[in-house]
Length: 575
Image 1 (cartoon, one colour):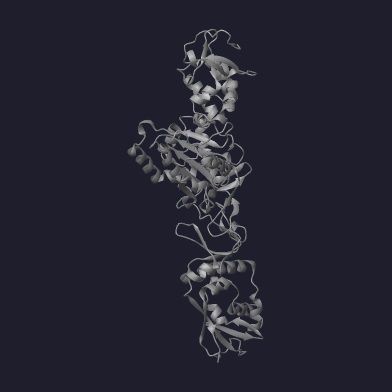
Image 2 (cartoon, helix red, strand yellow; image 1 turned 180 degrees about the vertical axis):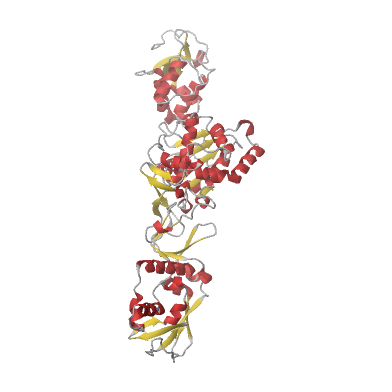
């Protein structure tokens, strides 16, 4: 039998206990006993208690209210409802946490409902309901008593999955910088916050008519990074990475700031090429420290363009160290798509793939000369030739730089890049990701990315050498180059012969036609079809026009490396 107590208003309602909580039965309603309610912490009641209601009535000369009248005040004000919501959220965080840990349900993850949690690294881990049940199959929970007063128990997983306090999300997204109070309803944000103790400068700003404005201007809200904080790293960036070019340096800093202010798809990747120990990885790792777990270093191209790429979904920066895309056309094509597309097809293990916004930008670094397959009209890559000169592989030099970084440089550079100057620079149109500088290093990557036939011609123009028999002309410095013989001597494939002929025709001039010329001596003398090419300087000019860009030709090679002589009788020179 329930224990009987006397109600405060003398109405003698029946009082029973449910899970230790005293319950009053008042006119058909069950309400919490006011003595018990009044004993709760204020955050848990946040409403007018029975005692407070009686005190207000006495102060105004009104009759003492009954319990039933007090129960009618249970409708909470907006502020009280907000407090109640906060209390419920706090209860969700602690619901079964001792037995299961901080788990939650995702209603749709790859077209399946899953149980999820964040591991120690902050990465999302999921399992099916069946896997979840099997992992905790021995755990049960008491849910009441039966008719004989014996405890009733049910599997903990079933209890947790159906309990209203269990936290549930409709879907998963990666929204960097979005605070919980601004999240769309039902969305689980994979963003785990900025690494401590980094605090973005925009947290001290307000939005003015001309963009972000600091509430109070500091030395980190100007266009120049204050001296004495991060001098060595900035010097490394300017002189060792950007070769002293202020325009390239400004773009690189803007690229970094834009990653913080406008996380999301970026059409420009940063490509670092240079000798071992020149500071490529050092710079990339320092920048990635701004993003904590949302930065990832990879060393296998399949991790970037292969299957099972869930690890890319919650990343702001991907650093592909020594990832060799240049020699793989399939991977190169997929990489170009990966850089420019605004979305990403995610393929987690165990569930169907799905499309998610692509939020990361890419950094690649390699000691190899040829890092990427850069096309003629490449607009995707900022290619930097990194060389620290005498400080290459200088451990003490980079150790001093790292010491400066740890002792305030990291925090200062982060604050400056998230300050008012860069906020305006990347938000009001002053900075355009797609108008990146065309560096000499990018031109070198384009040279090395030419198709095989064009590569033969390009090397021929660079060195001034003709890798096969030829016929020179002393009258105008021209040389005859046989197409098929050049294919054979440079070990091109038969299907490359037409492309080689087209490339030679570019050098010969508009409207040039192939001709036959005798080459060889004695019994080996025979006619070969090919093209008469003008002097080397003119050929180079025509080739640059064809490529649509200037080429850095060797200054010490100004003519064909041949002894020019008169053409054979009957040979037709078209100029």
